[in-house]
Amino acid sequence: MKRLNIFLENVKMEKEVSGICTDRVSAMLSSRSAFETKVKERAPQSKDTHFIIHQYALATKALRHSLQAVLDSVIKYANKIKHHTPNTIPSRSMAKA
Image (cartoon, rainbow, N blue to C red; front, side, top):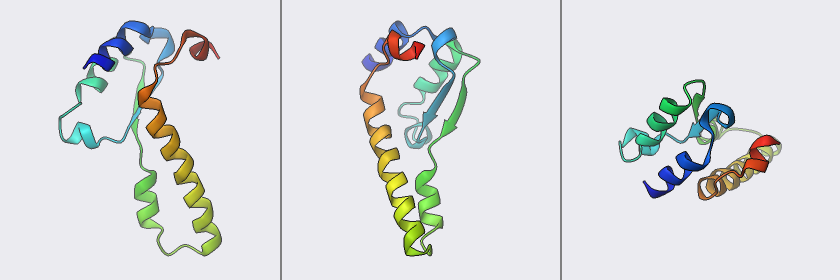
């Protein structure tokens, strides 16, 4: 909750938040569903999506080797972004870019 409160205090929701992307696992378990609710309260214009690339990976196990290599690199970069993003709070300069 501490990170959520810091995020909510430092981001101008109405201007800086246009979307939320989660993996929905914690939301399904009700352990952190407060995040989406609190963001939606302060930024009703935001759209919520969920991270589904792993489901695509499971569905495409029979891909040719060349396509599998492309999908593997996409997953690698998506995971890097996914795991890096929760540990940062966007600065005002990043939000303006």
